[in-house]
Length: 381
Image (cartoon, rainbow, N blue to C red; front, side, top):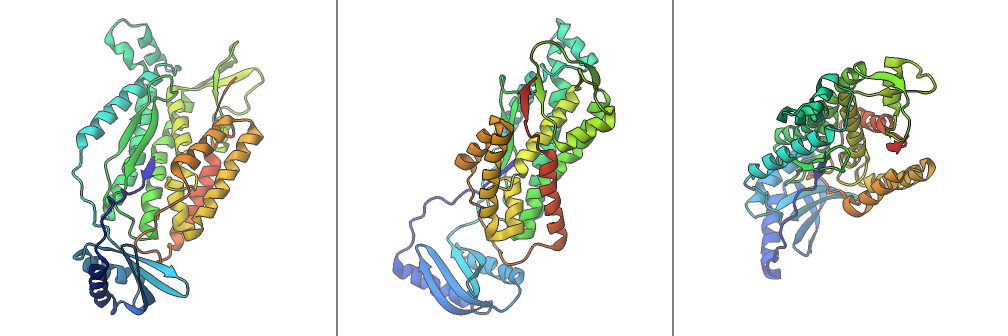
């Protein structure tokens, strides 16, 4: 789901001014063949060199990372007014022991909570019959929903994980978040924690986009299979929980059943319900705000203008909630504002532009967001 921001370094007692001056001189000697230095500055514990690069940003970063490491600094290469700034941050690369036991426990708890949630999603005759059983196997009645949803979330998270490892970024294993009843789906998704900044916009984009696209590789076959096993029947009396249709879901339902006659509705198979939840989670993560997957994609696409994109998205969510009367979007907008925010940490190399192919894929991700959003996610029908 969300790529948790890389862990900030603990508060550091910066060296005394005279020590910083010595370090600044040492770093300058290691920078001068990379950058034609015309200005130097010390801001707190950060040492900044401004000037013009003597080589391509990627090559410059390769040299500086190796050189700065022995002094306990990490270089950030950024545009700065009419030139380039190389910022030396006292950030050592974080290497933490993986506490795999916690990941496994959370995974097992989430399997149990989604299995419990799946108990309430009926429509699979073979598994529905288990509910009447007196044996322990009756608890497997929620398996079609739980297995499908966990597969979508798992592939999504490991899409992030393996792409990050490919780029040699420091990243944690997925942390699944269980949510027992009354939470509808039995989980609040999952996160992985980025322990180091991305190298450049291209790797940032690949790590962010890999999760949603990988998850869709499971969700799309699941929705086709689930709809194939779904049925059309008369609307039952009383209130029922109805999942809203996104543009994509409406098209897929029409493709499978054609126009639904008045007084009838589609009774979805639990696998289709899990696929809907997978689509919904993907849509939430594709919002171009802060540290969400979509926020990282927005940074890769728009650079420093990503904050404006995030603010516009926040306002659009409030308007969507007002127009549709759905408090779901108002609540989500509030969570984004108070818990996610609009900030995004830059990559080490903020100069190398995003490739044209990735720009096209980024626009496709934004289109996917529009296709996957249900105007009213859940309502009583």
